[in-house]
Length: 136
Image (cartoon, rainbow, N blue to C red):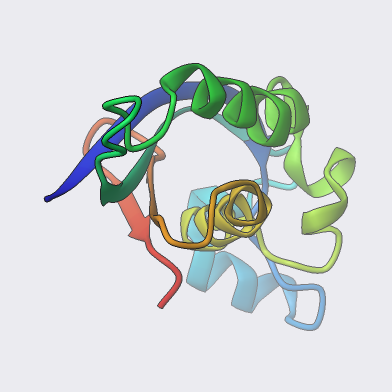
């Protein structure tokens, strides 16, 4: 039987949504207040879900302590209290939208999860705005 194990984490980060190849006017039109040249911040909530068969020996799909450590090393240590545009290399050329952040997180975590397990990232930018990505 397949079971999903999830762990919630969080990080606080600043960002600015804009494209270098667009005019200031177009950036303002598309990204509005998220285009603030002085950046703005969010208290991101992250849910990492791993789905697979229960190991008959351990009773686990994945050891939650292992998942906690992966999330800390790959996401929280890398993103927490950072300016994503300035301090995180993944976003030097990538607009740090919630969609792009979730894909980057997936790509950081996926190599550390056994290949027979499915992975889904759910990222809350606000309590009402969130995205999910599962590698498709």
